[in-house]
Length: 310
Image: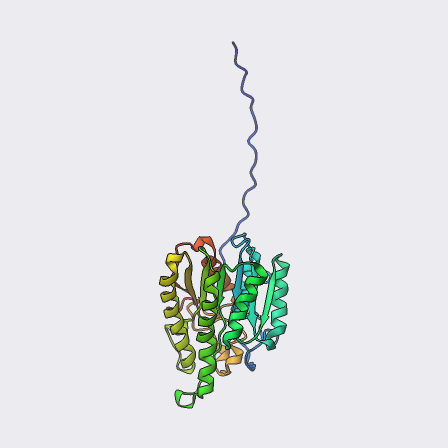
């Protein structure tokens, strides 16, 4: 029996992928010096020159956090805002705390989160009070029905002229904002975290290379690293990962509010990449640590420093 001749088909033409050249890390974001400017604490986004890039127009999500819920302390602006926007575009509902005087930034960030198609919950209050930290966790769980990622990001710093002139009330403000709130919020959140959940601490290069004018801030950041490594050992057997991100010089409202105008023009210029970083450049590190792609990363401190060593 004769077999039919195989039909000849022209090869289908597959479109060539569009080129995606790597970005020179020295460029692509603001790379100049910063104009003289100063704000009172806590600092707001609108008066900044240049305005920080939180990834509003650049971050593209890929569904890495679909169906999950996150709580970010200090999420109205800066690094916290960039992380919130990225988490939302990855599919997560996002709650974040902020001081009442930061409501304008909070509204803006909440708008970007909602534009991504997920829920936003703003939590105005002061993380220096134990009750507020507890309530922030409880309201997040009540609103979203779960808590999968806790980002401990709230922080305060100020330029110090010397330890001998550092007021006790200022030390108290730094320690309560950077350490007490971290402990209170994590303690409240842990009972709600299930296997696969993640805690991420915003530490700092100051934990490893402290500046004398930020002595109290640097102390708290070193303590946060110890907190991260100890808690990772405690929660690892429960399937909960704990990590930290250590930013270098990042252009956020905290910088012009630190009250160091003489240093502002050269901020970040001494990094190997020759510039300060933008909040948008931090967000992918947090997404990695929150997502399943980071499933074997725990107890780590991930530097995002423009090449400055820890």
